[in-house]
Length: 438
Image (cartoon, rainbow, N blue to C red; front, side, top):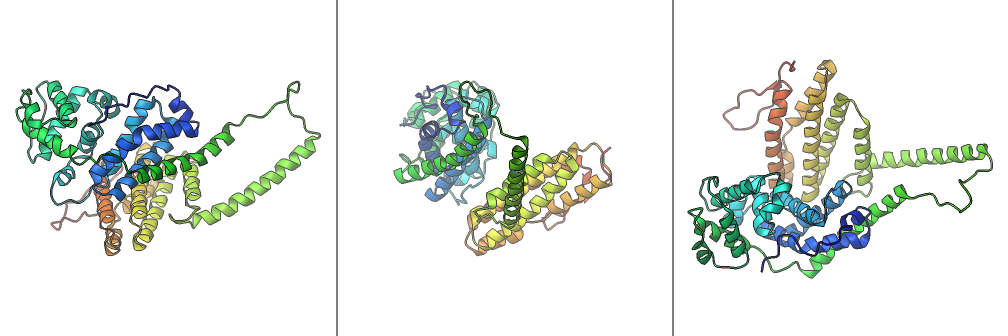
């Protein structure tokens, strides 16, 4: 039987608030409520238990990263985690030659997530509407369009009232026979064929998450949360007071200054040593997270958009080298993460350049560096991944590169870049900067 769209025991109004303080029982509660549905959806989409576990783990950790800024209840958190899983699966689509997974691979990212969340994760359109920023009627129409594409046909779902068809989807998801359900559905006209696609999609779902996998995913989340809990307690720790004493008094001001000076020197020395060591850290190093945290601090502290764009381009170059190293070592997942981070930095650089008010020589130099780095191809990384047996990761890198080239076109246009005519070979040619806008 299909699970309800939103688990009904989300009754603790303080659950998310306590989880934002990284309380173990609250995080475990949120995890346990979503874990089975998350893993089953990921397994259905990936078709591989290892890949499904990796996607589910990444979704849980992303949810943990975004938890401090999350604004919503436990039910909304459940949908958010599932959307993170569907989004992760859309970037790691299996290269199936035929069948329903092969058809899924050709959907747009939005349609892929919509089909995954509505038909595999059992979230109804009323709950999906605010998450996907669309009206329920629009989601029903887009879902019909996506189902027709999965059936190898084209045709929009706009026009008729699809609420009865949406109810039929629920019945088929619960195990009803598509042909019998279709007898009571008048629109759309091809409802029997669409409901058969729904049945095939539901057939990808396994019964439940294996206990060993559930334990690993739960342990991974709680272990990561334990580190964040320690930092949270440190930041929010209140100074203890003694009744009758307004504040703590030091014997002399000189002693206070001396203590602070010693602490400052130690902090500088230790921080400098860690900074130097972490600057050479690769993705497999224990200091890599320290390195990335330092980069984030530098970006946040840099308020000038042109300087920040230059730093983002340099970080993109660093991610490129890391991706090459990981590809050469046969570590496909870390190579894909580095490539994804590289393109994130380049997107940020392009948008920062657009924020600059003055298009002077310094801005043009930063723009040229951005364009040069954006034109760097991922061919060598893909080749190394193929050579080390990481075909899936190579395909992910290619997909990320293709998406970035599509995303950069409107940004490049706003930066005053005129793309040259494409050669007959079909290979992308480097863009050429034109006169800056304005």
